[in-house]
Image (cartoon, rainbow, N blue to C red; front, side, top):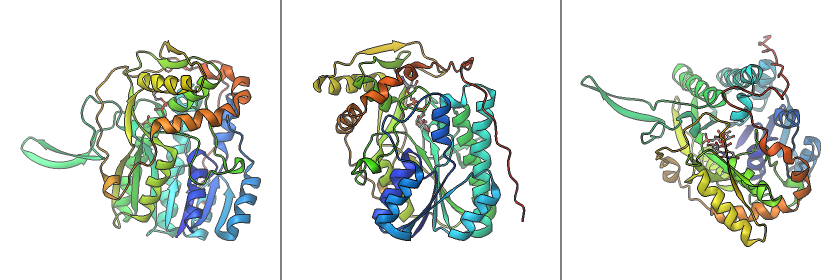
Length: 402
Ligand code: USQ
């Protein structure tokens, strides 16, 4: 199969490319390196060093020859997007090329605009390019469980049945997103669903939980490591706790710590996406999948990381910080996640084992984390934004010239 990975240079994109190549598929990647640039912009870096893209490609080309190709460019440039999709003609497009950080989108107006512009316009260009060149291709779009928010109701998988004034219907499950970033994903979902209806495109919209870990089966040597962010803006909660534990920084639980989310190991996230590639929806179908394995409260996770770190002699402590975010700190959470299991997904990783591996991997790069220790608590206050990070310039949209 021909697989196009949008955002190949990122945490999940790189790991997915390694796995798809190992299966014998032909992979084409694109990236504008915005993740590298945004993390640099806020003054941080990946705890685990990663090679520049040219070296990454050299390594893959030595192993896989012309089964791997790469194009540097931006999805908001519709000529670029049309060109790559029109020439490669993928069977499946995995769209991971979005600004992925909720705190980043909350810094100030310029970062909100950048996030929504980049994510929504980039996705519109992808669906137009699909319509023009590969209408039978399968778009696998990375959304987020955060689209649903925390509604104090059971969360269905994309759609729900309702009865209203005597009539029954199936309607999209309501979205109650909690950041400008999460709303950008809701806007994408609406646009992709409409494109499926309008032009008969096929798409799987993944409502993915929080992904953690440093390893997959293919990440076997340092040249194949994927990035690992630990700063307040790009690091996610389990990954941050592990990085904090290795340098003796208190694990930062925000507020009461009763925030509950769905979680998935990196290896299992790659497995899920690969199952979806193998099992496309019908023509014209817009399919929604809730993709996570287990749910945890963030305070419970801190205890878990502390317990495993202590066994390794790291002596971790936990600190409850005033919550910089605007979110419920205690709430009901129960979300369906059955469809992937029906397609054959079985979780292969246990969270405690993955935390142990992460702590070992991060201990090898302890100095890099310690150097950027001030990045652990930048404190972007969601209600008021941050005044310490410079304005972000929003790239103009490049319209098609054909
Ligand atoms: N949290 C802490 N301490 C920390 C960091 C986070 O208590 O040091 C709490 C947050 O307040 C929040 C929860 O942990 O309640 C999750 O925060 P997060 O930063 O791990 O994840 P989030 O901002 O929700 O976003 C991440 C990814 C995003 C993805 C999303 C999936 O950055 O791309 O869409 O997870 S989900 O959370 O299911 O929406």
